[in-house]
Image (cartoon, rainbow over all chains, first blue to last red; front, top):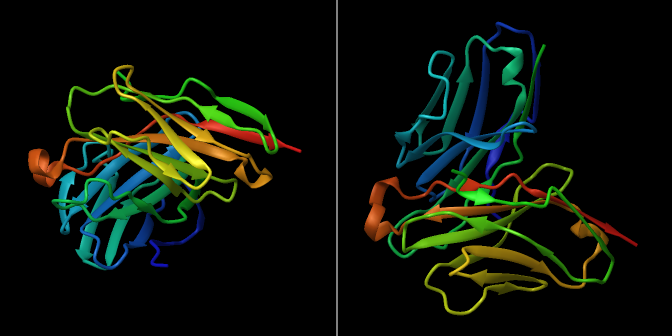
Length: 117
Length: 121
């Protein structure tokens, strides 16, 4: 089965350090999402892309977070500088959204568990 | 206002029994889709079932069925014959609109806070 691949699975870093999370979406999917999951907030949408173009990053703290898709096989989420409150699980998800695919689900990666000390 | 509400933080069910997980949604769109995902303790998000707003029949996928009541804006997940492996967090989600209506902005899923299901022997 095709899968969304996220790296790293776990990341522990110190406050102030840069963190980069990577995602390889499923080949052929045209939409990529970044979600963050915490106990307090649940699943929050940070950003999403359609055909590599950013559509919405209103959920992302702009001063420290950035999301890009340098090519169709790679999406990145960077935090610089990281803070303890960024500790969470970050999920990448991809999907095919076109006419006739309204029922297509998002496929999630296994997530990156980030701990900022 | 919350787009998706799951009022049951935790549910318990005995193995082989059926269980219903509640989900209500809020949208002004006529077209939308409802999804359920399962998140076991290992953390991955697994898609279970989909219901479209225009679907007249309730969706079913194996032991999963979706009790869709459009007028009440509810989309409850029913798991029949529960198994120990069903113990997990379950999320209800909604996608608003159709591609014909929303085009490039279609796609994001709004998630509820989840229900932790525990199946006991």
